Length: 184
Ligand SMILES: [Fe+2]
Image (cartoon, rainbow, N blue to C red; front, side):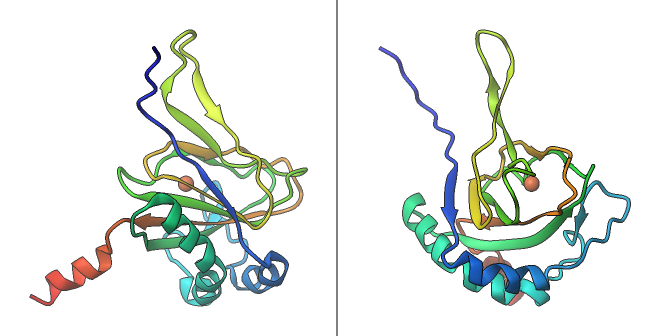
């Protein structure tokens, strides 16, 4: 008998009508502006007011499907964008200890770019090697994973910008809870 008690889920979806949404969304994402980091990002000063409404509209059916697949409510928590030029990378990190995180491939060519690399929470028992997984993705795809999963973006070797939007989701509406506390 073999017990396989733990599963590591990766959900992958494609935004419907991606050709329609791509130029609308890409146009609103802040331009490349590297500030002593390894990728150009608005993580610390989100421009969600520029692209938030288009983002929410184009991902709404994907989030509906994810909600059904995962079986519990999901609420968007924060959203940010990243642009990577040749040599840019994002070192190994996670997005916290609970909830779900996502990478949405907005400008991405599988012939030019690599997908996000995911690291197993345990090593190969036979070799001790760190186990990695690079899902096959195309532009317009969204990969959703447990927020605690270590992941990274390899250094870009392409002359074409790799653009993604990343976001976090929780199973409870933290903002609502925060506001309830504020209003007591
Ligand atoms: Fe990340």
